[in-house]
Each structure stands twice: as C-alpha cells, then as structure tokens.
Length: 109
Length: 111
Image (cartoon, chains in turn yellow, green):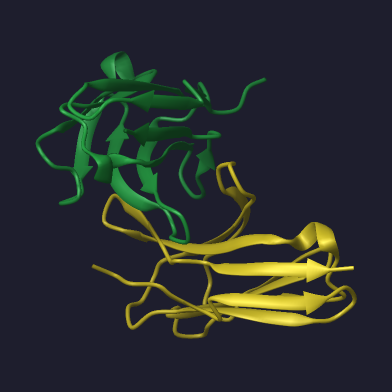
C-alpha cells in the first residue's frame, strides 16, 4: 500500500497568516491531487499535479509537487476564515485512489 | 445539477439489517469509486469500477459488502447484516481520468 502521510494533523491560525501543509510518501506517484472537505460534505478537488517540480497556483493557494514525485505541499497566503476545512492529498495506487488522513485547518477572524 | 448524486443522505438502521445506497455519477465519467470515511480520518478506498467492471476491491470490503454498477451507469453499495462498526460516511466519486468528483455522501448510523 502506498501511504500518504500528511502534516500537521491540526492547524489553527488567525486570519491573514500564511501556512504550509505537507503530504509525504516513500513511494513515487504518477500524480497527486489535493482536495478540501467541509463537515458533512464530500471532498472537492482543488488541483492535480503530474510533473516533478511542478508548481500550480489557485488564487492564494500554491501547490508544489516534489522533484522526485514522492511529496507535495500546499501553501496558503493570507488565510481567510473561508479556508477552514480538511485538506486531503490523494494519489493513485493501482486502480485505487488513496488518501492521506488530512490536515484540519481552522482560520479564526 | 450535473454533479455526483448520492441517496439517501442519511440512513439510520438497526444492527443486523441490510442497507443499500445509490450513487449516480457524472454521466460522461466511466470511473467510479466508493469510499468510507469516519470522523477525523481521510476517505478509505472500498472499491473501483471502470464502466460496469469492478476492477479493484479493498481488503476492507468484507463479504457483507457488495457493490454493483449495472450497465456502467449508477452504482449501488449494499451492506448486509450491519454492525455498529459500519457507522460512517459512505462517499461515491466519479472520474474522467485524473481527479475525482465526489457526491455529498450517505451518513450511516447503525443503532
């Protein structure tokens, strides 16, 4: 099983702060995806990264895929309360799409 | 609404009863996944369909669980003889290739 370890598990910050969350594995992935999930809802796809070293930006969110394609990071600039949620990374393993346990982010006004 | 649809949204059942959940994927997506998620955890992969073929099942999927996707369209997940440990959110997702699009899930409570 290709495990995805996410850190930190919990993060509580104030509005306006910057943060980075991490997704690490000992396995090489052909691609990695990031999702955000709100309580009681299904995860929502944010981005897919496929090339080692790739950087993608989505407004205040910056996603990076490691050169060796074993890890990824998500950086949020000037966090807002609307960014609160569970951030999940996922990668393919055979036909399955395996998820990490997520980083639970709370942004307070 | 052309997103992934799951029914019911909530299900409360007595231990030992059978339950069935339905998932209607995005129509042009040939890939379909089922997941189970408990509080504080990421989604756990249960099974994968490509069109009507069930190509992968997790070891988590005991013989009380069965899934179908007749004609490669909607899918059902049945749990027989439910146990309290089956209480969880059951999520369905469909995919064109990369990236999965999730439904809102079915929250199962076994009492």
